[in-house]
Image 1 (cartoon, rainbow, N blue to C red):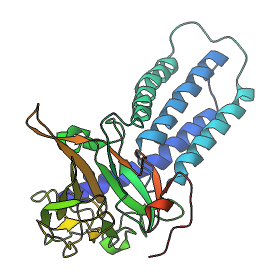
Image 2 (image 1 turned 120 degrees about the horizontal axis):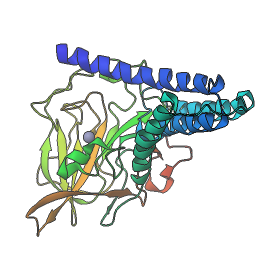
Image 3 (image 1 turned 180 degrees about the vertical axis):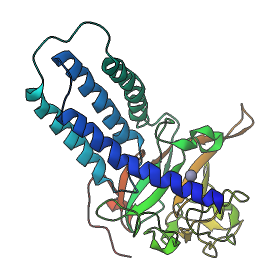
Length: 324
Ligand SMILES: [Zn+2]
């Protein structure tokens, strides 16, 4: 219970900072208290580095994806208009605390934002799969090729793993902010389709779905399906208890339903985890490989509008998705 409370507190704090910090930054640009253009310029770059960090490094599935665009626009607008308020006088000589802070912000936040931007690049050796969800708009919470956008990077098998939630038209993934009832998350119960042809080599489906944000560290993968495909092994994790429809030895085709999205295992809220592994003869073990879904490489905050056929899978623009 104590651990659950601390996770809830952490998540609530994280969400709160996405409102409070950009708001304070916009305010600091709107009312510049610097004594010269050079100080103001450095502050502007420092603030925009922090906003860029929020834009690309933070996942906006809790508040709604639209908010990251709102804050980027508000800060750019406030900063641009505040030019007229800046005194044209000379900046007093010497090193100011304000200037040092701005420089540190540029280095740390700007550096991490650049690292997140690099995470959009798909490294060589990717495998091609079809997207495993097909009933609406889905947002990538963890995904990409750098640690700034994908916390899975610390696990060798999951280097390029993705965590996906379902979002509504406002980019929100549930009714409420952090509901404990898993049914209030839009993705809960969505069918999970096999992303490839192959043979099921592992399947587990009887692990209970705890309420959010409770996690099951004893069974981190929770319910899961592992499919041995041509050249790679695909893992789909956290299906709903009792929903897994395949067993080891079954052959599956792309688009075949293998289970439903749930919250089993090490999962703070309902989502689908997917990653691919290949066996490296030189290393004598499996390693994670990048995945392209229908040719696309998705990163944190990517939105996939997916219908019942791969043909209408789109990225970045909304098209009418087929109803379930
Ligand atoms: Zn994951």
